[in-house]
Image (cartoon, rainbow, N blue to C red; front, side, top):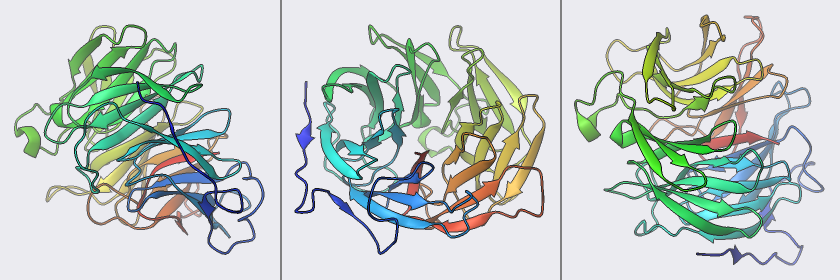
Length: 360
């Protein structure tokens, strides 16, 4: 299996390049945002502001990671694992330095950019931090999930999944990995030990239209208390998948907008990014805030967005403006999740078509 390609630091001992900022040197402060610059070859570190509101926030540094980075995940040791078109880059987020790149075992064709490029998409970390799981897109065919040993930074296994694995999640006990397969209308469960797979269709609108359909799964979250996967569709339907049985139940949603990124707050509140209309009757972009009991409110967003992360205290959401399709912008929208209409969302400059996001 492949090992890591090492990256030599420059004369200052770092591969990071930073825009002028008082925060561009020293160790990275807690609460800094890290975004994957899908429109470039970097990840960008962003100061969200002194109080997390976005006031005074700004990019503080960037690190080269490889072409068109998509998803990223950060471990308790401070290492970020970034899915790019070329491999999974490993970044020391404290020193803002790329440690190396783990090449893919899967053949993905020429390195390209854009929504349909080959290479890594969704990425997740095992609960014990010993493995990283990355969904690898193979243009024109089924994808894979590759398993990376975080100690050796080597690929130790490959499992076949569906088409374009937008998102990857792990069960609370670490025994299964879930690839959300956008273009094949399903979720693939991968046994973390044996790499055996099970495909489960998740298509509350059916599969008519095939590759041309908009009504496909994009992102999922795993509900900790029962291990079920929550997959939002079109601001109308929340598909709840029981991975033990493959059974899908559907709950009503209210935003009526095409939906992509999703995250769970510590109290179980579900946050879902609405990217905007795909049909004549669809509503504009928004962030859905859904309580565990199913009560929803929507926060209007200015322009399309893609993914979302929520602060540890559950009070603030950070929504990336990258978007996988046209209409993206180079920033993050900061949303105060307290139910106070006086606190309007704040737009914050951040990176180059920022897509995946994590809070350090």
